[in-house]
Length: 424
Image (cartoon, rainbow, N blue to C red):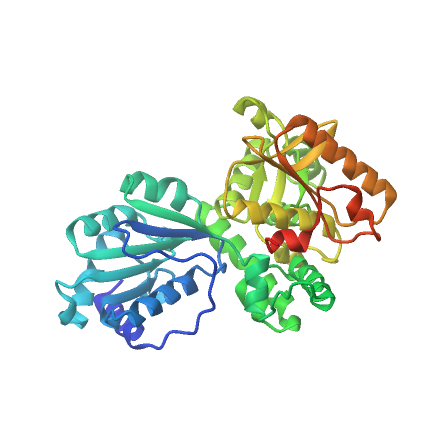
């Protein structure tokens, strides 16, 4: 990184007109006295949340020269070494000397690209009148980098693609109570949401462009956030594992069986390598591995995990017929809705299965696509009775999309999925 290039980047940002930002449910807090970190899958909207925060601060009277955003994936700043980070404040003061001694706001995007960034951020927060905000597309930002280096002086928040509520807001669709036409529209939009997912750019794009953008996303995430970051040697195996994951969302993952399947396909791979590769995909927020609810951590680790992908739209990049397996997609969307606000989530199985439950026995959820079939309804009622027997004081919900006339009334716990996702 050269000082001349950095000065151009600083001046260009301060003088540019920022794009209009649609509101998200999550708000980036300012004035906390802590470093604020946003971590989440690439393209989930972290950068625009920064731009929205900058615009709000400017609207409150903060001089734009005191607000600086830098993207560490900007080619003009490469290569960036940790010992060069001090150039940021020095060049900022040289370009805008009037900011010396004034309170400043520094927004750093994709910080995981600079080794040692967290020590530098800690030092300038101790020695400068500055608020620092960072983003990263690695879960290490949450679990290691900020929490370890800053020791209680950070706030970390996870950013997901749009929820169904945000999806409707981005598309300008209102929820009208007691309107049959509006309910039909919302059910249709939920099907579209399951198919295309909640990445902001996808939601706002014309439908013919969406598959192309999603394919570009999948390649970018695979190579930039997994292969390059971890130095993965067997790219073909990693891509096949990613393809398997996105084709099997909402399903139990047995690594021993997966190992046999890959071996039969001609891959020379160990179980340990598969565990490592799955860990890389988790770290990049591409998938979540939901453990079985057990009394001990050891038992949890010895049972299969339930696989959920971060966005159902990405399935279209790996599956020839993305309209299939809508029930599994709906289950994943319900999981993600709960995962946005809590981490103590599990599935449970012992003869019958509960799709989602919490650690305290206060909530359990089963999801199915349709209650129109008598056999499906019988099976789902049995699963709900099983859950109620396990956790008598829990709130149980049976979420569905399609139903037969009157059948949703046969179990009091049944609720239309679109209503649940909209918190109605």
